[in-house]
Image (cartoon, rainbow, N blue to C red; front, side, top):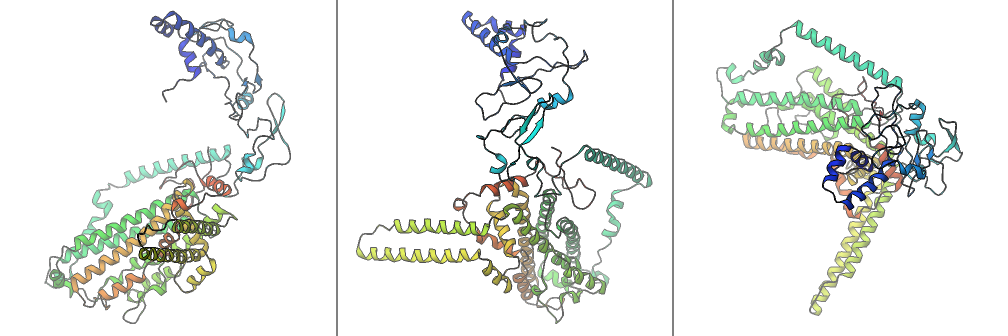
Length: 611
């Protein structure tokens, strides 16, 4: 930091060579002042505490290991036993440059050996002395931080603490305050020596197993790049139908590779979505912060995959409509409707059956040629989707962050307050007019502005009405519950809070996934219009017209997008109550989980606090 504490300054000035260098360019008056400063700084550094062995390093201690209390203007100096020590006048006369009371002079000399502190004494002396420290006497005039921060009721019964010297003093910090984990009972728990030892043993076993597996893999075969990627199968998987019938068209190879690449990316998306669903698939809705961080990373990966899928149309659009028409007739009745993986992606995200648009008089899964594929897609439709798990998680998140506090009422009060401010501004800011006609127009404009403000206030308040929201759910306009919607609004309203960073990332990524899929559908529809115009598709649909209908009804996370309509400007948001801030602080974790390494052996991580 560039600063020097008093102890380091005293240590520097106690060196003989440094004193000589400093004294060489100082005046006599300055030397006297410097000597006085050193005389005052020397007692602030206590005697060294060394071990019984002679080769133990010297440990210099500034006053005591116990920091001063910021509640007192000056805290007493504590000795090695944790008791207040007194400094008499003789201690201030220990000499200018060395410790004349001892048998040595100068800090650079080895001091005589002293008896080392017992282990219990060392623990006692390292306890910080703060406003709620266990070693501080409870003062009624000092605030009770446990009750102020909403961490639980203050302890009404006096508790005691036994020191190493046999002293017994009241303890102001209750056990419930020290071991509080009611919010995340399975995430932040007390770590014992056995837990650390078991974790070290498991890590050692995993490392040994991996080393053995790597050794076996290297000795069992000579793996090449082509073997690892199975390029023989991939590169031989293109079979243009125009070439099969001796009418080879050059552009058909591009068409095949583009769609094969789509299917590979769909497989990767399914792999990522399955892992996210596994991490969030708790019936209670509780997702640990470590798992939430991983979910945010993997949904962000899906966003980038979809962006690649959209940009692949740039390559496909290099093909001319006439070049596509040269081999299109060879493709019938094959169609993109028969992509099983894309249907699985839709169902895994949360596409509902009522959003589907039938064509050719049969459900969408009937277009799949294989019966097993039809059954797999139908089974995925009956399973809980990512949208279902997100809704449950949002409801649980609102309860964890707010408790009994009504966030909807908070937002209604904020809307009323903002409307009152706008109303006063309209009434106190009449337009400057020059004649009666303009004055009449200004009054009409003011009345119209007040009327428009009232309409906006009423509509905005209705968004935070549970009954009005349920009506929208019954009509199919909304799909998430009122609590889940409020949780989404809460996350976006306070997205800068550290406790909501991962939650905000996850919600933003889900919105981006929905937008990217809509963008992909739009590019597909535009490409179809460019290539075949208003012709029917090879699968029997109406082509461009059908794709436009699907695009309008296929949004999955539309409720998360609509949450922006609920928001207020940042300057209109009142401060959160202390109990909610305390809950948010307890959600913060001092570390970030790795995307690939979890502490547990199972699919869900249960982190313990090793701090």
